[in-house]
Structure formats: C-alpha cells, structure tokens
Image (cartoon, rainbow, N blue to C red; front, top):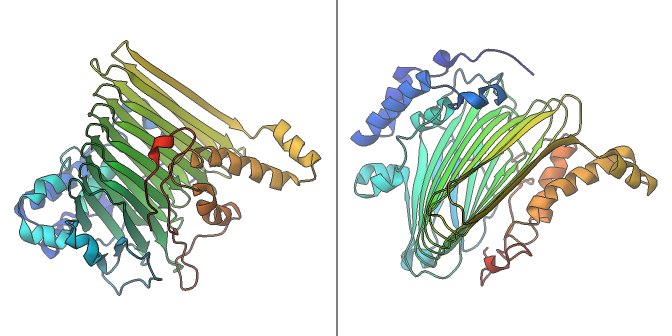
Length: 464
C-alpha cells in the first residue's frame, strides 16, 4: 500500500472555504461553524483515540485539488421507484421529488438551499451535533457541506414510507458532502436507502464523498436505514450516523461496503427510550488496496433496551479492514440485552483486519456478550467443497459469500442477500460497479419483514 504522507495544508484553502460559504449563502450560524470546522480540520488527528491510531489505514489519501463548488449537468437517471420520496445528490445539486400524496399528509422535505433561505427554527434540529467534531475527516465533511435536507414525518403517520436517495459521483476532484436530518414521528414506519455510485469516467486524483445522518425517533417509530457504498476505487468517504430513540422505538443500521478507496464509518446509537432497540449490521468486501475503518458506538440509557452489532468483512489482495464495536450500559439501564460480533475473513497473505469489541457495563441487571475473530478461510471447508466437484477459487468464493450472508439474513429486509448479490458478484470478479446508461445498479422495491432473530420487525405493507 502507498505510504505517501498526507499533505493536509494543500487539500483546501481558507479562500475556498470562504468562497463556498458565499456561494451557498450560509446563514450566520453556519458561516461561523464552517470556519471553525476548517480550523479543526487543520488541527485534529485522523483518529482521536490514541489507542487506535496505529490501526487506521488511511495511507495514500491525497485530496489536493478537490472542488466543493464544482457544478455541471445532472447525471442521467433511470425510472425511479413509484410512490417513494426521491433525492439525488450529484454535481448539479440536489434533486427532490416528493409525491403530492405524501406532502398532502404532512410529510415535509426541505433541501439545504431552502433551509438556508428560511433560517428559522428548523436550523437547530438540522445542525444538531455539528459542533461535536472528533477527527480530521469529520471536520472536513462539515467544512465542505454543500448538499443536505431535513425530512419530517408527522406523529401518527402509520403508512410505510420509502425514501430513495442516490449520490452519483461523475467528475474528477468532486466533493459531495451531504447532511440529512430526519425526524420520524410516533408510530412512523420508514425505510431509507442511501446508494453511492460513480460514473465510468477515468481521471487522475481522488474525490470525496461525505455523508452525515442524524435521526430522531419518537415513541414506537421504526426506521430501517440501508446504505450501499459502491463508488469507484479513487473515492475517499466519511460516514457519520447518529440516532436517539423514544419509548419502544427501533432502528436498524444496515451498511454494505463494496467500493471506495478509503472509507471511514462512525455509527452512534443512543437508546434513551424504555424498550427501544437497535440493530447495527455491516458487511465489507475489500480487494486491491481498499481499506475500511468502522466504529459502532451504542449507549444504553433507558431500561429494557436491546441492541446487536454484527460486522463481517472479507478481504483479499492488499485490502485492510478495522471494526470496533463499543457498547456502554449506563448505571440505570436495567434489563439491557447487548451483543457485539466482529469477524473478518482473509483470503490472501497481504490482507489484514483488526476487530475490537468493547463492553463498558455499569449496571448489574444486564446480559451483554461479544465475539471476535480474524482468520483465513477454513481449509477443511475448502477441501469439502473441492471433494464435491468445485474448483478451489469457486469454493473459496462460496465460503466468503456465505460468511457475509450471515449478516444479510439477519437484516429486516426480505431477500437482502439476493438483492445485493449482483453488486457483490461484480466486485468479487474484479469488475467496477458503474453508473451508466443501461447499467444502473439501483436497489429494487424492498419489503421490511421479520427474521427468525427479530420477528417483530415486520411492516404491514410493501415499501416501494
């Protein structure tokens, strides 16, 4: 892997930040926040915790020349899902399609330009946590914020809602930094899919995709947030996702890493409401010189809260992976059930992964467990499949795909393994996942349903 020292001072200038702020007509509150974030970007480390700085795999990152003000014609789109809320983030800006039937029932989607123009009481909710920037790349994402929206589902809205969001990278040195703020009212049922792809254009240099998500779940709200990350192998990505839960609320974070050069994922879940629950399910497939750095942080505050975090990665060639799962159980969080599982499979001598599960238990009346492993593919399993007529490569692939399917089968989306397989198959065969005419790797209509592990997840209707 490349060992070039990052030249942070050359990535971005104060003049560029000032120009971006002016071009977007930042309200005063964010003009200051953007400037402060730029200062933090220049001062903060890549990894705030000194215990884990030796585990980060961000060698070779060089975003010199990124253009946060870059504009161009919109990316071509296929027909999108009927009845869904559509959001497309590309070089042209944000494109929004809110079905009139949903708008008439009180669902609101406000994009960044409108939020900035209004400058009203929605800004504090939209910018919640913007001052809590722990590391350099998160500070960069806040500094370059140029896309975003606020989604609000009213209390008592019981019909399932589907949000289909696409981020398409199509230009060299492009920088998309998206911030989304979502409030799911009481009893809401919401499925959000976030898909990140690139067009086939070849270019020099790297580009940035930053994604920040803040969810606020009212009592008994159920939200599934599915991310498919499959950009080109020159994209540096930063994900930060956070949620707070009301009584009886439930959140499922589903993250599938299939592309990108360097990718950092940070999930923070605060289970505050009594009886609330969280599922954090992540898979990674890394090849060539890719690297993934994932951290899951779940805090149990309310009583009778349940959470599971399951992460599995398969790495080959010179790919790298790191996953940390931290569960903290507060002193009054009685009857907590928590589970952390971090496992990785290495298919080559050059691949590497680190898995670090952590439990902080401050209450006795709980059940908390963890498991972890990093190992090559089991030779006995390979031999067994070879004895049944499969070639060695085919046997290893079958074992690796089954290893990742363990996570997919626990997701509250029916048939997720089969839905993601075409994209995984292309990556396994060494092919790029490309956004182009006649070859749009879009997710189809989905159904949120129960699993053996979580039968109560089932929504009453199909989410298109």
